[in-house]
Image (cartoon, rainbow, N blue to C red):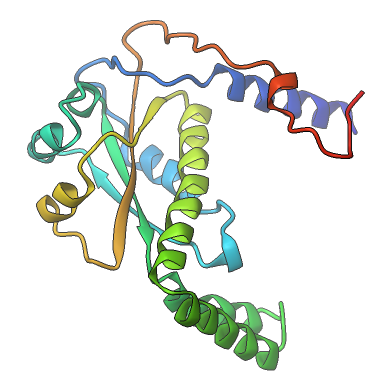
Length: 217
């Protein structure tokens, strides 16, 4: 590893350690659209099962929309005070993305057309045979991947964030006319902290390592 790589790795690690959930934001702080688009664009490169990208992102930044969301999100103050809240919607029918994803991959030379066609058929077969719970589980699991990437992308530009699962998903869908294909999985408020973030304790690594045959020195 080169010195430049070491320095970049150290900076990235520190950024992760510096990211904390923030619930008190500076009112009136604005994230320029260009920076918000950059955050969302970086987030969309998160990994996903079969690269189906099981998510859509609903951006809530207008005051009227914040006030609509406020009671739906259990009156959490960050909804009103942060610059923006992004709703991460899990795709219950992510298999419908397979054709676009694998056709594009084949066109770019990443796999043969024949293999792409087989992969699309295989993905649709899995979704068709495993049922709605499979689609829901994968929608939620993969929504978690883009949620974390979104918060790190925001931190990289100097913005704070907080993930929230404490909200009424059904009420959200009704209030914002969300298609039934998508399930609200996470709300992420983003802005500028109005006070030093609370340092949340973490369990020691030793307590988090589940004992199997491999051990760490």
